Image (cartoon, rainbow, N blue to C red):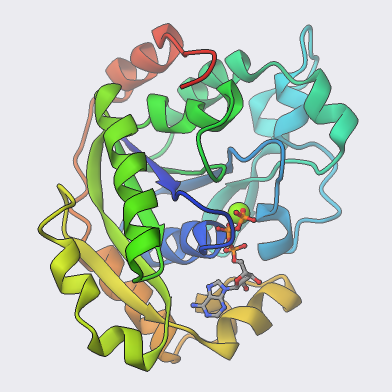
Length: 257
Ligand SMILES: Nc1ncnc2c1ncn2[C@@H]1O[C@H](COP(=O)(O)OP(=O)(O)OP(=O)(O)O)[C@@H](O)[C@H]1O
Ligand SMILES: [Mg+2]
């Protein structure tokens, strides 16, 4: 079985990578989880998982005529399989975004939950690919009206490619924002539940600085608890692995939205 989720948002810096890693670790208690840095132009999953020295990365799998096997870029960390991406601009320019379909198809054969850490915004083929490929999208945003508007645009785009909404994670929430009820109101607009409201937390910043997931760095923090709650609230659906893999291989990806 496998279900693929794109972890996405409108703006940058909302906490997509933090959420991919934290949700992945929380889900790994129950499932075989693979997290992939599908933000191939602005990769940062490697910084969150202590993989800055990784030899092979997703970039090596995306260049034409590569000798690398998918397994070369898979690292077992924190109870999950982690596929980091490199940060070199030259490697990004050499990478063919279309090849991500085959990489994700191969990964889908061998895991229960695939989390694709997605680029901010919807400006290019490599940016929209994870949303087009995924079964459902997890939208990560702050509980403000402009952020909601961005998130709804992501949902609308996802739906136009048959990708449903798994739910919304409100992140970096300050007490006053939490009390304003935006998260509750959001359930009226999004086609999925609010999975969690994660407080703005020093622990999240410190975890990132140490290159360790929040759930390993501060497992008892309120933020970590919120992510475990998000994992509980996410109803993972079991798709047939070979059918999902075939769908990835045959996906038609638009050049730009
Ligand atoms: N709940 C939180 N409280 C405080 N800081 C947070 C929280 N979540 C994430 N951060 C911090 O915000 C910054 C951006 O987070 P992250 O890298 O996860 O966002 P992103 O959406 O993936 O960004 P990008 O669009 O650049 O890929 C990081 O320094 C991270 O540690
Ligand atoms: Mg990121």
